[in-house]
Length: 168
Image (cartoon, rainbow, N blue to C red; front, side, top):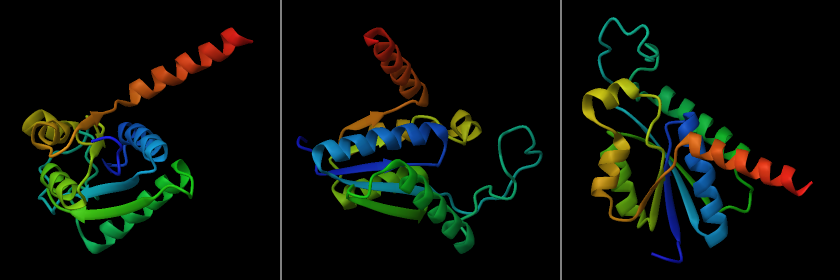
């Protein structure tokens, strides 16, 4: 496992996923590893009414059209350009499929040494009904999996700020 050569970080472009991306980027820089950032767009699904109040955008619910895939790729490029330095060995992938299965398949194909994933994201309703993508990945991963909550990052930043204040 160590040193890490290939890290996979799936993202749904949520705040929790952003925290996982930051950790994955730091690990990739530290180990001079290749970082693959993966967004899995779920296949087209029929939206069940009513969707209001459930955190589901009816215009984006389950769309894997070419236009939506191109939009997700643009969002992924913008997010990674903001987060990562240019010297990072970075691969971006936007793939249509079922998230857990696709993440596991890409991990095997890319021969990932580690997966860094956020346990929660945009689709909390789906988690309540079907279970977490992260849980499925942890159970079936061919490599170690690190889960990262956005709250953990905030706690870490608070501790760093307090340490800086104590020094001055």
